[in-house]
Length: 275
Ligand code: ADP
Image 1 (tube, rainbow, N blue to C red):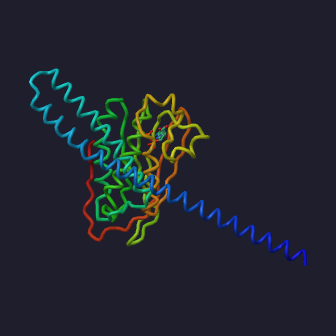
Image 2 (cartoon, rainbow, N blue to C red):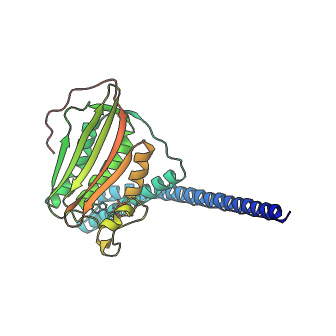
Image 3 (cartoon, helix red, strand yellow):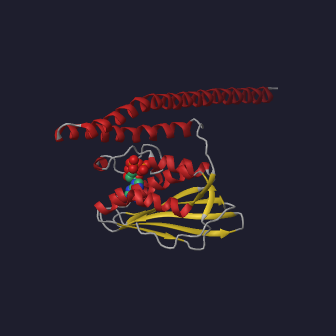
């Protein structure tokens, strides 16, 4: 019966196509894993000698005989450090890609962590004449359980970007608690700035890897274009989600939602901290 043969040929073809697609998908995944492993190994191999260069340049700075020698050694140190930042970004990103990044949850003080990040970036904000402010929901518990190091990395990236892309005005870090349950807390953490903003058609792209808005004009801003891709992956690994809202010439607001277990042991809140 011709109809049935036709049908059988069709199904066989479909199966062959599916099998070919499956092979291609597996090959692409294997290639991607190989790329990530290569990047991770390379970054690791570069990082070790780079640490040596930076460390020795620091020693040279301290023991330099003349002002000129000190300046040379200091340039080696700061260039080395800049390179290490890039290498660490690539290492993190390739670990995330290869699904080799593990989180290390521990009890930590969220308010203190936010203040530490703000304090780290305060000199750069002051240099640019920006107000760096924190608005912390006073009804929140003080201690949570989470990967404090990775959260610090996320916040440093968001606040660092806000300072970098803001010429005048302010950067506001806001921490709001949404639902309070005895053991779990939903947090909304956002970083708002009065900076250059991002065009609407590029908003979806900024969390992608190696994406920089108007890359050419933006070259005056240093960066790898990996920070937000890492931020997004880290928050998603923690079970949260990221978002962004922006208007060109007015400013941007980057934020994330995250549910964190409340730590058993709580401390009393610091009532006022000056930056
Ligand atoms: P990098 O800052 O290293 O370029 P990111 O992934 O952190 O990489 O950011 C990607 C791009 O998103 C930046 O190059 C910039 O164009 C844009 N961007 C990020 N944060 C802001 C911000 N607060 N204001 C305006 N543009 C921003």
